[in-house]
Image (tube, rainbow, N blue to C red; front, side, top):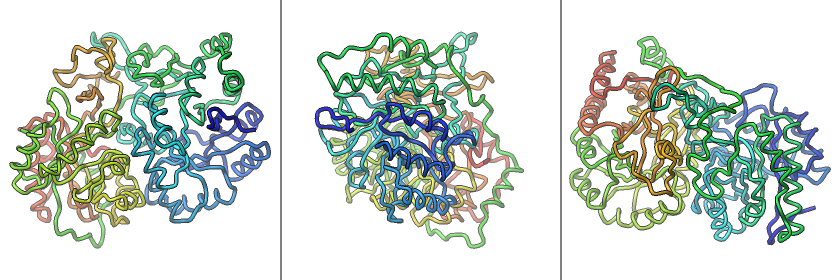
Length: 638
């Protein structure tokens, strides 16, 4: 029987890790279940978890027999070599008729459409849906439900429901959360070759770090578990349709009681909203049986330090320990050259050199160093200040006909959307050539055919289908994933017809957070009066191996943890060009203006003489001498 409130259907959604778990919770109070096959989902750490094709078919039949629904997680990022196998899996799923597929990768959505698969599509939390543009684009593409970003509040949901009422909204109400924005944690993929976007999260956010005294371990990224049991009225009245419990790696004994307690509370509120009160015994049960300490996360506001369990006292398991990022070695360079070599290199008449910078002075130095295209950062690392309109106008004049682009935020909440509504028409007047977009909503809301739109690495382009999808949305080029292996990269570069940009030098933020670490140290959030603790620039987190990780803050109080060594693909530039990469980018926000010019000049000279270029380790040493940072092949090691 459907549960309704305020003319919206409500659903309690439970996780399934194994077929045995499914059998044990089938008769619980859940209205629907989400589960994954043996591949292509976000929980692939354990071989004894997830369901075989036969088990999936049986689970769907059993659930449907009780009037319950089953959603299949098809929500990791695929590389191009996996497309054929995933196509077969999709055809199987269509034959067994689950109620929906949950996806992250827009390449998967393109594949589903190309194959004519007739199943409902839900966007995963890893699609990071957090603004109206993303929701409207999802609706346009035929998506029937979005799992909203973990950083969305009930007020955000109310706004979404008001503007796009026909969309269904799913929200996490209980379980494990992440401190990093959905799909914006790239560190595990780079460091371990195990991407959190491919279901292999190694949880570097759960590592201990040293406090400012250097004597005590703290856990500044270890977010608490969410528990919204005490806020059932607010949850239901927000307009959320599906109340999602996290826990596909948990057992059914743990899940059964949680499901049933939420079921009873939801039903009691629907039956008698004004007479509803929280069951304090059940609330105590949740507290007494918690895995980690509990929080309401972002449901009501940015929770700041209250959402972090800095003591780490209840961390159940750490999946990894810190290791040093790889150095460049002669042996690995030779292996990569052989792996990336092709018999018939793609011929590109022009190879662009792009540089992303943090200030007007750095932009000028990038131009002086020989950049073809310069990206002016929209999220600027402190202590630098955001680009003003006058500075952007000066940048265009200084570039003397070379392209200057403006970089849109990786996440654009209401403030950023209002600012961009004002700014983008002004950019055209100034002469800015185009924008680098950070999320799909920015394409939908701000696309203008009179400007060039390019896609940043935050779009997580991991296969040729994803590249083609974004090209169809109007992007002239896309930036390839920063966490792909050399083998995965080659597969994409050879297959795609979409112009591909690749970050070949420097470091972007590999962990991107709403949570401000330095403000949290002082008990503040971005919503509080803050003494601008980050005004002096970056600060360091030191892990248990003694490795320092730099953390930057921007004008929106977002935080960025960068790599400890710079990406450096200088040894394999020739091979990458032969694979068809159309633009090389230097990610230089953390460089001084002087460093920007010197590093850009090195790449300019080598690109202009690429056929004659012979790499030696001296090139890496020179870059280290200029930047003060060691150089690494990073994810290309895998």
